Image 1 (tube, rainbow, N blue to C red):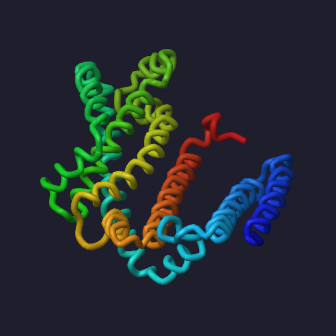
Image 2: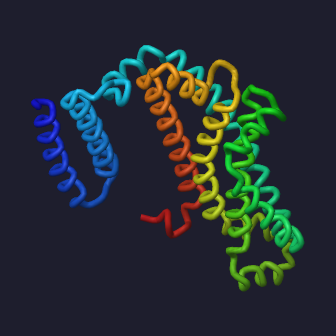
Image 3: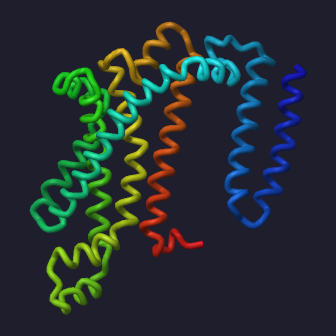
Length: 279
């Protein structure tokens, strides 16, 4: 009971501080302090509820137990991170997104591809990953190559659709002006259409960061070597070691958030001229 009362008091105090911070003019400190304080409050509430109500750690371990497991298994978690994120998700992300942008330029040049490829792309994008992953494992083996192949299939069409839409974002007057200057298609592409398409491209790239990590983890459920986030999660669930499962989830959450933030930071530098990046 003491745990519950203490956490509720802290929750009320943190809520009051957050209300004060959000009422002030936005700045870097506020943008960091508000979500950090809210997250810490949720963790303390989680800890207090588990201990106060005596919830079985097999069902829901407290954050303190997850932190201990995390610190004691850093080499294992690092190896799983490298196998899943660096080898599987990141390599598939780079290949899939790079290929999608190149194909989008070809689609933009060809009305036939616009009418033929994009509907097929929508069909492939709707395929369930649980049906696609076993096929990729059979084709490319149990190591990271099959996970990268799943990631390529997942990120390719979202980035393709966003890039094609972005390449059509420049208005007719701007394109007519480029033709008036006798600009070739490569010149118009590099000086007008690709810069105008960058906000759309980065929207696709940010969506793909989440899809890449999810795809790599889920693909490991259908066959992998004895390491990787998906392999560890499925194995530890069978052993009822939920603290290790949550430790892997923590690694995935940190990696996914950092990856998304890095792409968003790159977007801010590339599209500084766009209204969404001002202020």
